[in-house]
Image (tube, rainbow, N blue to C red):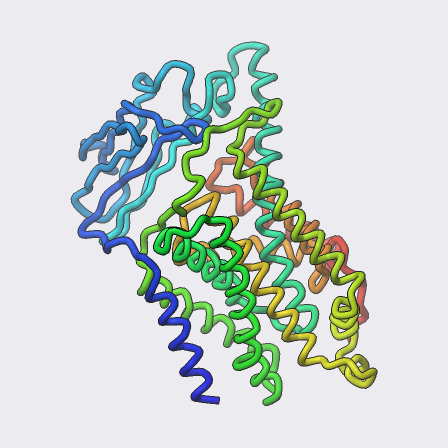
Length: 428
């Protein structure tokens, strides 16, 4: 067993070592990229001041939309975008967010995001005329689209987590690292080896499935055979998550990095919704995968066996079902789907060592809201979480949108503890 664990760790470390990692930051800095519908915005002035209002420096975006301002030390800084320097027809998406308070940590370069939009699509400013009503509903439509996009990514991750919980009872806090692993594999093949992102994503999904199988074959399966309690395994999963996260940090670095493909796509307008083509395609792929996995659970022999194991493992074993084999298949599917979720998440943001950890709480919220152990419940719960996160920004500050989603989770659990699609169970 010890040799297997050592070999598994060496394999993981060797693969992550091959990842191209950005150089460690020599000092603290603020930086960012201004884009309008996927196109870089040139000639915009960005000013940085300390908490006391003392100027620190300024920069002007280049032809690629990028800017950077070094800061003297770690701390909180005020970053201001000069709206008078924006090109005609472009404005801040939220007019009250021209100045942002940003925390810079020691030895790190902090990315600052200013959301831009074409004239007439901005929100968050003072009401001016009857056109503001139209602008409000356009913003609601845009946020609804973004909510579905986020919800489908959460659902991909939540489905694997829900299936593992349903068949083993394990609450796996290391599931977020499966997303990170998949995104980093795709980054390696796409950026380092120069393979097209679509093919890199397919390879990443396969490797993610192998990674999930390996975890259960040499780790979780052994713990189950030794009679480890679910509480002990849950705590072990927390330790495994920390271990993997800092392995990723050590080899990949603390800075995020984008994929080589589909970075600066021009946006397309579909009614009131504006988005890059990759977003529409990604949502189609996510929805198709979720439907295929769901139908496989309902129609295939393996799916029926998985549902039998989830209902009663002892009875399933007495009926001739190979429970360990079914659980291993579930881990393989869960790892593959989580890797795909990591790739999709990397498309909408940069690949970073803690991207899976940052979305893990939302994944748990989606699984719990939909009903623990139910694949379709994970889908419904995740969509609800994604929609509420985005739509809540209409009335609450963006910084509080995640808190609002978790508040909805608490309220739903008070009235329906089994979740939206969960079933009542008698305890005791």
